[in-house]
Image (cartoon, rainbow, N blue to C red; front, side, top):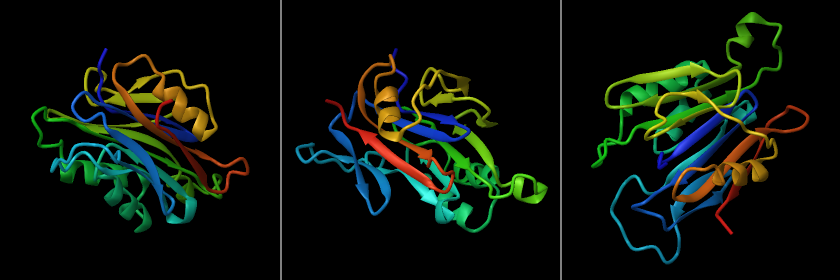
Length: 207
């Protein structure tokens, strides 16, 4: 089954995989603490605006992690750093940017994982938690996450529970790369550190 690009979001970690039939010559690279999907050095030139983008970013000094399949990742980070609650920070850019205006009306997908230093404080606890979202041509869906949850651009375009065993980012990136969906290209992942203070990232570009 070809599901296109997908995210998997859990309460303490998240991952993203590029699956592509049209633009397979891509990889994940790390640039100043951000993971970016970019063409490989030998990729054909293209003016497609959806080929390269930041796919994993850390926000607000390590309080939040964001994953996604396009340029909406950056405004989600900006909203979080302005103090928006995670759900609102996810919803507003998805609604504003809408699905991608390509030949397939490709949905935008994203996830936010957030932590709180004081889960006993109700006001602060509202800023914690994990959410996954998708904006399609016909719907905007945002779900709170209590278990690993997948949403993809095609076929599996509603959030659904999925098995995710790994919790170390590089291993997790390889695990989602090896999910039984067609045309894997590259993958990235992020997880809370062992002490719960901040996040660490990893990626996998195939063997």
